[in-house]
Image (tube, rainbow, N blue to C red; front, top):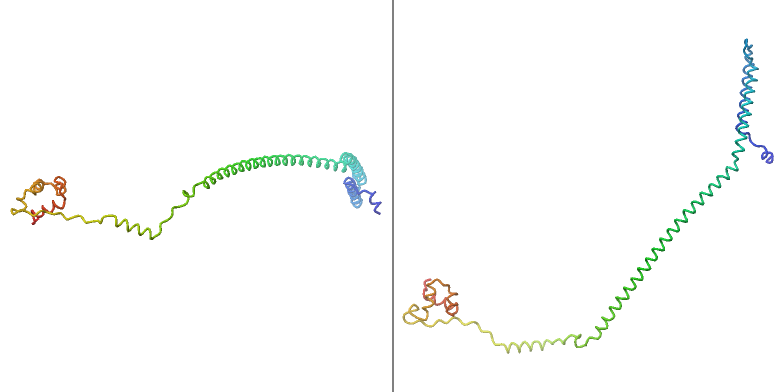
Length: 235
């Protein structure tokens, strides 16, 4: 059965159409025969119309089958499948070429980045080595400094510090308060008749301040103010 089914092909579309036309023609014949109508003058009978319809259907079916056979020869499924497969292979080849180009571009860019990174690493190593060489001589100079210069001076003890303070205080003269202005005792005629105070009174009468009078006469400000106060005690 499987071998027979393999050799027997299923009916094509044209064969199904021909079967349908034959069935329609038979249906027309059956309907016309049931009506049993006599043909009119000059009018073909139902049998003649059925035969004509069958002939036309046969002609149409033959033409369609011939066109279908030609089309099937031109469009063989195996050939179409082969064409599709070849087109798919071409598309895959183009895609692989594009992917290869992109991979090569990315690889070249990666190589450039790696080269730039190596260059920067080398420059950084040179800078590190130079800074290390600069630090080593400075460290050697610091080690060659004399201990007497680098070591701090001996700090004095508290006892020596207190002794030095006592010596300084003993050597320094004691501070005395400024002496109070001494006014000589006035004569019997009072301050007005004393010639020693006449310049002070003259400058005061001229409108000079006690400070200016002291500067002009070379006296202290306190002495001048005291003399003026004794001259006019009511003021």
